[in-house]
Structure formats: C-alpha cells, structure tokens
Length: 75
Image (cartoon, rainbow, N blue to C red; front, side, top):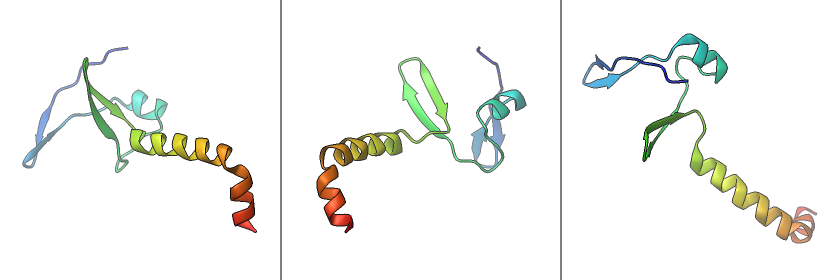
C-alpha cells in the first residue's frame, strides 16, 4: 500500500519519516540500519542486507554439497 511522506533537511543531508504502523510491521526502530536499493520502479528501503542473503544462499549450497567434508573438518 503506497504511503506519502516528505523529504526534509537533516543537517547537511536529507531524510524522511516512516509511519509507525510500518515500523511496527517490519520490526524497525530508531537506530536500526536499513538498505537502500535502486530499482527500475524507484528506491527500495529494506531492513535486509541483500548481500548477506546472497552469502547465506551460497553458504547453504556449499554446506549441502560438501556436508561430508564439513563433518570431517569439524572433528
């Protein structure tokens, strides 16, 4: 559901507010880090780090493929 907000000056930068219901829905709060991703439709603000998600997918694939080797290394 689209929401409208205003970009405001914050020191030498600019920022915007996120409505409280959205903060609660995505479990975000003051001081949390979010990631800004440029898409064809505009800017996506996400609490998830896409690089971390990609790294975890690569890890899961490797852990599955080499599970016997990993088990031996853990001994």
